[in-house]
Image (cartoon, rainbow, N blue to C red):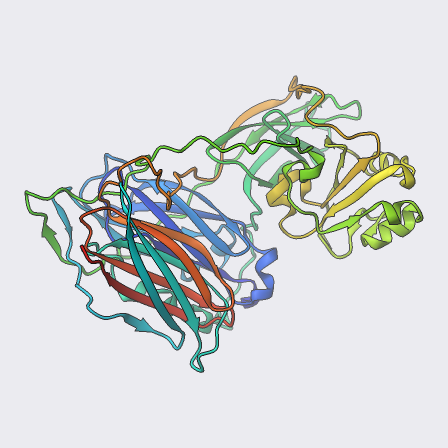
Length: 538
């Protein structure tokens, strides 16, 4: 059971905040068994708790390939005081609070800030070396710092890894206490469950935004175990799950931010809704124990100085640049779905049978499964997309009939999406995988119909999605003056390849020192931490 555990580790762009500021968050999931990454949670629940143990803000961040990145705009009504950022997956509730993440932080008045120790030298942890070089140039509206980092092991060999890099104005405290660093969090890997531990694993794994509900038939004698159809918005996503013998159902895998309308109903053989459903609300587990506080020193900002704040919307997005030239068709871009895992082209389609083609794709036409993908799970048919048109609600017989009705030689391509992130791209509809077929005569530039979902008879429910957050603009517009601010650079998703990483940091005029924080792990799991002071010539 210990192999099934997971725990988040998070890092924020700085150590303290003012009401109304944006807190940018990055991090990663820790796994007792790294092989389980693709089969465990893809939704992280977070909340802000005040000293009175009240939850003042909450939401959900997506987990993508074990990594977390997001942000939240702190309420401008929050009072000065100590707060706690707590995060966990729904699955980790099966194992207790030792698998939760907690990070205390203060919210201050705009006349205050945390005292930051001035670092003359690098603060170092771990055996991985981070060698930096930088140069500075001036432009009309800001200065540009060109940064190059080399990541080397103890033998000076370049390494690969994943790190979070942030840069702040030199007087900004970047972390509350060292005990919340990743190298300390990794100690969790050496703390297995006690032999006496037992759990019924009642809290499910979430593969995205989830809903739980109950079905009520029209007549008491009618069965409670029935297929339940769920449709997001105007067919942006859809899926079908089964209720159990008590009418309870669970659906997970929707991928949307903010909120969306879900239409939910049980459908009879004529695809007409019947009975009724109710959604069951879920709340975060309550906080137990004493409120953790961090040790810090608050100082007053001189009256002549303004507080350095991180507010979303400091920059205005420039209009997107549209490249002129030959118009690219939707199928050339796989309708925006990205590159498939496998593709069968004209050469094989001209000479092979469907049995041979599906064999190449490792797709079993009888079980409707890709090799061992979703092995042991009761799932529906894969999503079938033909010339860009999604085929919703196909039962197994109809799926086989539609697929096998095509003569392979008349097809341009057959593409398969069958990995563990298919439902991140396609939502619930792609949970069982996706087959995308392009016919030789079906090419099109855009949608040829405005097909709308008929929600008659469905019940409509508003459902909260992943937390929407403002992007951190590492590259400011060239025609705007860069105002002084606390955080100058933030990138929680950096992959280090062959020991090298380069970037540009845009610095407001008047800033004479910045702090660069680098934190993460090598590809071998070794912790990396550097706090690098950079003095800038005026």
